[in-house]
Amino acid sequence: MKRIVFKEHKIDFEIIKKTLEQDGIIIYPTDTVYGVAANINSIEGLKKVYSAKERNYDSPLIALLSKVEYIEKIAVVTENKKSIIKKLAKEFWPGALTIILDKKDNVPEIMVSGGKTVGVRIPALKLAQDIIEYIGGVLPTTSANISGELTPRSYEELNEKFKSRVDIIIDGGKTPLGIESTILDLTKPIPVIIREGAIKRETIEGIIGKI
Image (cartoon, rainbow, N blue to C red; front, side, top):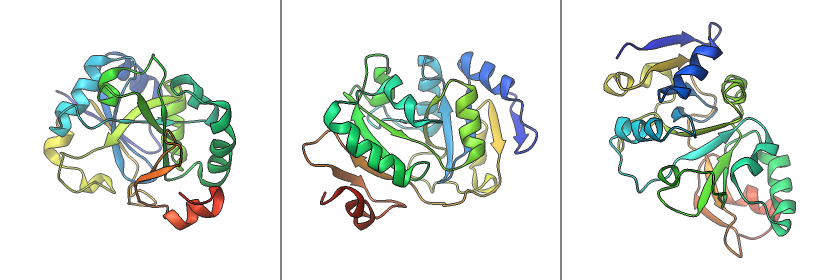
């Protein structure tokens, strides 16, 4: 496979879009760590993400978004959840908070490990937002590493074997945070933190109350 490497200021967004539409996969920087991604409508592309990571299908991907309003493209936002999402989005988005919601039927089962929920987040990195917006506003993503290995915070930290498994790599330098997002499940009666990452429990509780 011949890989294309784009530097941050010399990116061809149309080539990225076409590659994803043709079942390709890409590595790109986010605000937290480098991610690997496929087109949400490409089952073959999504399979390639799992294959590249040497990961089984039990671990879901999350959907990175370029705008808050795109949540409702893939997730169910009930009336009683709108106010809490609004508060969280105002405080933490763009940023390192992933919110788990009930998924819509257009989300492929492979992306969410056959589950009924989907994680959504808006990265606080303009380059990532621009890429996501250009390909339609939603980009299924996970960390760009072989499962069990350290997550890459810069282009230099990307595993050579892993890089050989993708079609395009965007070199955006070092990521601003270098730590994974916090994951908050809003599908429960009381919100539950699934993973505490860049944003701490106390900070979230200061916005929406005890969780």
